[in-house]
Image: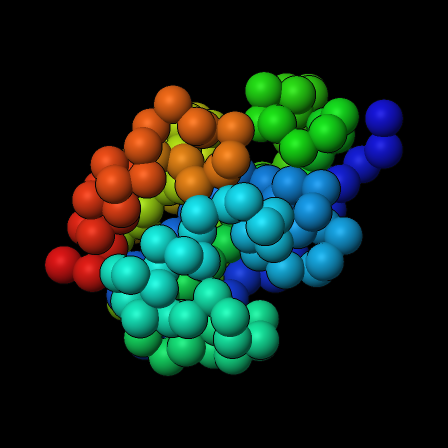
Length: 166
């Protein structure tokens, strides 16, 4: 199984909120874009919550997200995984992104929203213990926007994701 590498963060100075995924899926890795799978609800939900039109070019969407004070990244910088499912990530292959440097550079971030259970579990297990007491965040899990998370209706996902705009 080959080693997959994620993307750099989307972030601007003054960001107040970090949205974390686990690791980009195959469609995103192929397109070099966060949440590129056509059935992933991330961009449609952000359209309703933050007014970022999913039809805009990717660079413009990410710029608008950053301009609004939101950063976007993944917990994992690299791993081995067959397919796109988080459940297929080989635990012994996990390489976590450098959050100490990220948070030192983006010191105004005080909220972290995790896109799904794997992102939250990896962040709490692999990142938070290494940050120490100088970094304190409100960390919350939101329902995954992945098409694999079809058991939660769109309306319920949208209602939960509205929290990022508060």
